[in-house]
Length: 392
Image (cartoon, rainbow, N blue to C red; front, side, top):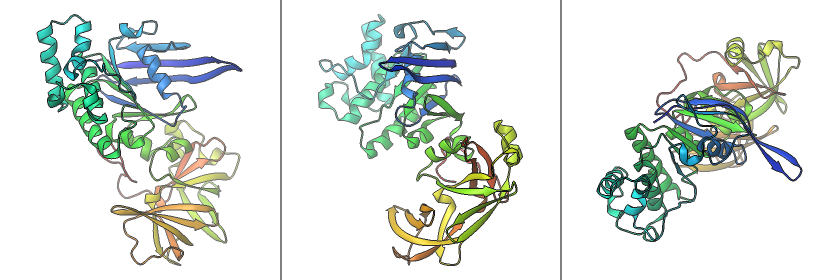
């Protein structure tokens, strides 16, 4: 196990028309035994960052450390890490027990010892009943667990995982996430995990680095990136369904949002403290009055027309089990609302939309930086315990 640190990591590729920057000056630290997820959309640089950490790509500049040991110029096989990829690369001609034990064979571990260790790891991942089978006889989820067992068996300095659950069905993903989280906690291994799934990131991670266009937009706990997004991109990417964004104007103490012929005035709070904490420009120092206001769908409610902050038309109700996702048409576009129940409401009807006023975010229109929150401060902290945050 190791602490992993990257400093000013940069990766530039030569392309036919010049240069393409895949990673731009990334710096972060993964504490020994912690689980970090690199989260972001396709093409944001998360897999390239992982491959540089693994030694599968040579960084253009910057430094990579395992503990105090700089490994920037070492080959992948010299870094003592294990990787699990999206594509499951098991040897088809070997039984699963041989696949699991193979890394120990390469390291010269005696046969009895390596098979004993392989069976122990298989038991941890609850695949001991599969070890005498060949990979072709297993389901996709079973093969993925064998691949993870093979990564774990050699007790590396860190696990690096690049979207290992892509291609699995949703039910199997849920089970695999639970098993992976349990195994990582039992082994106390350092893990760097790449995914575009915020659900995986929220459930598994101690830390999340949200990436966009080769840069780390925010690095923090799952609670921090969900509750205290640094900017508009993080706020809209982390959280499902996606945050509602509306244009507004501010005088420094109030933000006004025009919704057709209706107007919503929102009190500004936390501008100074947020600006100081995030090292961003405060709301009163801005040259423009224009801002964007964001409310998560969980912070809105559907009420009777005339009873909310503004009225709109209920277009569609999408059942989500215990909750429903309501799509509402308004003069400023589609609005998404998560409701516990929608009995008595019919699609096409006129409804009211009520805002939980202390759960809004205010973003600089030009830079996208978070510059304040809305409403009076809530009576209690809106933090959550544990690794994952699921609603606001």
